[in-house]
Image (cartoon, rainbow, N blue to C red):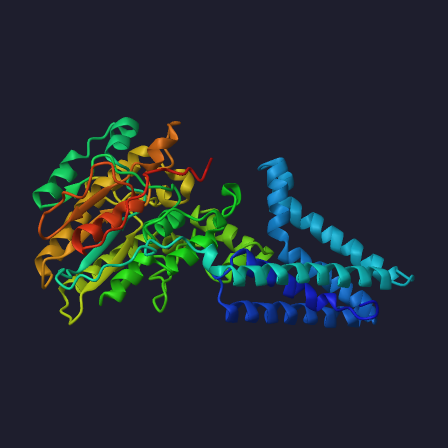
Length: 488
């Protein structure tokens, strides 16, 4: 510990291990190991080059350590600066990078001229990182032992009733991201959405007039919806949300387990991973896998900010800008076609299709008449606004009705169709009460049109409980309809 620069190995191990534990069960072990090996390879390479300059292993190792530490913990440093100084010059790259270059230049010269023994500093770094790793190993053991407690309390804790006489229709969960509810559309946008709701009703849908989501962030709302329960206290403090926890909960979906256990085949056309079925496409604003670790690094932050700069037209890469700007349009079009194809296909087992549309969520690609909006309006979340949202929502209504009609016409047997939104509109042009964030769309089509169990004030957490009770002979107790503001 005093004589060898073990810290050049301990630093990558600590960084990846800490990130893995912070996002427990959301990062593949193989991916974490490969990332650790990559970082160790990088620090050894830098150490090798530095040795030719210093001809001293201790000095070369220290130089490599500080360079890699800057890379790994850049996001933390940048966040601290932004928290203190906001968007001032001191928190921007044009300040941080020159100051960092100056610091490393001074460090390199200082190490070159340093004559005194550096073993104490070496011992300190070795011991400090070893202690950190031991603490994290303890946390990992605790996480592993209590992994079942860290998941959502399953909606299947009640005994599942076997219903041999129940029909098994194909089920389509069509998730419309950020689709606001009736009251919110009237109060915040002064928009009457009754024409769309009436179109659904003429097709035999039940539309809940006062439905709400339980959470106002997509991963947590979907984790709750697909597990028929509220998030566990293990999720963490609301101001420091663990998005990996929600991913883990979605992968362990009680709804998917119930239906696949009852003979259904699951089709995943969403932005989330399920066992054996990865996301159809990962959302750019939802980091996955090892990106949950690497997004905090210098290259991770730089790639994110370069992407944003290209999207906003600050860098002259028109082709890349178009590709980024229209990726969700292509995503929506792709899963719409997949859903239609799946609906028309015949199979020996019933189907459960989860299609997650990034619509009417920003980017707002079309106005109410289907006219494409200008590219300039698709260049970042700062362009969200109520007028374009309503136009895209109306365009989306038309597309949803087309999809519904296609499913109803082509399905080999009468299907169940659920139109559900994860939360309401969160970026109004004017300040509004937070309760509007939760007002969402909840409409369902049942072949027998028996909607006696579905009330007008249902929340997402009870949606599948009511559905399974109504159509699959279950007796799940309904939970209290509550909303949890994750921004508060």
